[in-house]
Image 1: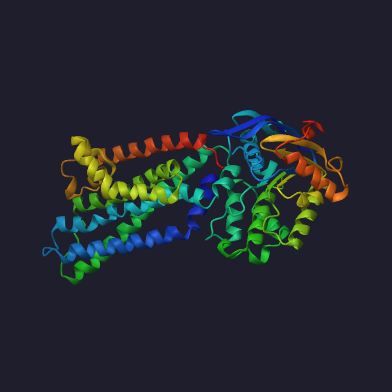
Image 2: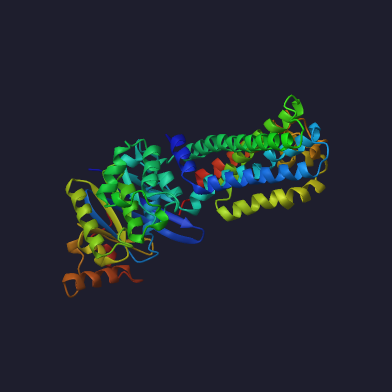
Length: 241
Length: 247
């Protein structure tokens, strides 16, 4: 029941559809950028770099997850949510489940956009999409999973930082600046920071020294679990005034 | 036939005592929960509804804490937020989400929309609603589970005189069916016409609990009522807190 209600909330929030549309636009623009700046379009690495944007738009999945919880505080619908489901942990778990799937669907949508536009572009340029390349599919599936993981982490972040603008600002600042600064301070641990793990999961060229994709995926799931536990604990205690 | 009981309730927010050792009992009928702004009314109601954890004491509905209720929405209907809606959702979507989460029959959505007079506007986004319409939508949400207890925090806010008269009728009907209705207000005149009993709080403590008609001061009539209310909720209760007794 709670899961169905969360799905309905998701579907009836316009911002969700705006995020999805902007993500597709970014995938298209990113792909075009790679195609324009490379001569050998038949090269798998070039095509992988183009497909990498499926994973990079996980930023939008992160914002989506944050909105799931912090958005309820912003519009004060959280009061009715907890009045209907006083067992707040159930609300957190339902949101986690629904938004992880939604994040994966964001990734699938981005993958479809990327594959379709790449196919059109390459055909026009007399090149071939390397659909039999394992590396290409690794980047695509890794990108989809990256979206799912970041949506799940977003739910945790939104539950911890219930101020919507504050939570989004903190998350974007982490990705744009803070992780880069922290990476220089922590030695080899830098490969285990969230964005670095996403890059590794996506088999991006920037993540050559990081863990293998499967391990990166597990580590990201670990982050999601840690955030969820912290979020559940604080959510249970927090006064809704 | 469900009683609401507040016993020894204390809530501290940091250095602030929002509610101090507050005890009272509410039975079937309409009870006005009165006090000036900042007296602790909203905090008390939020503790009762499980949204705020008490520092000490309990607040129960039919002997159970809110979190222990089997079907919270069928037991208690609450209106706490003047604008607790996502502006992009329609009125119907808002209610359907609550009905889904609360396992209530979808037909209840149409029933309560009709009851609060929002059927014609149900397909419109809440962002375009007037304050009065939002208040009606909040009431619709409170009525969704057809509960035996209604808890309404400042329900008259944003309603025009006709709306207030309509609300009074709606609450009277519910009370006459033997249901328990609690309406909080900082405006005595709003509840004077509808409440059977009143609970008056000031600075987080109980100042009076009992029948409305026993709450009267010099001058009689509404003027006397108002004088008594002001005296009760002033800084110096002037011994008035003993009148009526702390139930």
